[in-house]
Image 1 (cartoon, rainbow, N blue to C red):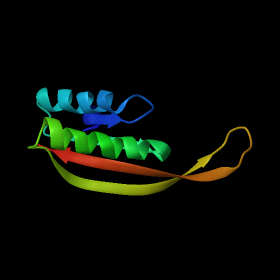
Image 2: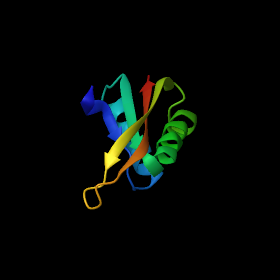
Image 3: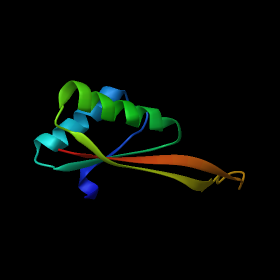
Image 4: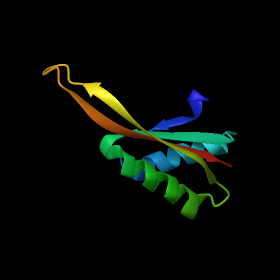
Amino acid sequence: MSSNTVYIGKKPVMNYVLACLTLFQNGANEVTIKARGRSISTAVDSAEILRKKFSPDVQVKEIKIDTEQVKDNETGASSNVSSIEILLKK
């Protein structure tokens, strides 16, 4: 399952869309898109572009949202960071 996971970072949206498309074309039935913080909007964009423009047979199976406590190594302060997991199935 973890090999079918796309982690969203700071690259352009199309990079992640193509990564998901490649996983589906290589035989994966399910692909998980994971993102934290400001990357959440990129994750949603990636899933929607994949579904609407490239592969209409892909559906959103499940969406998980969470809040993680992240501790800053320099200051020692902790802050809350939102995270999302979008499970896509073909």
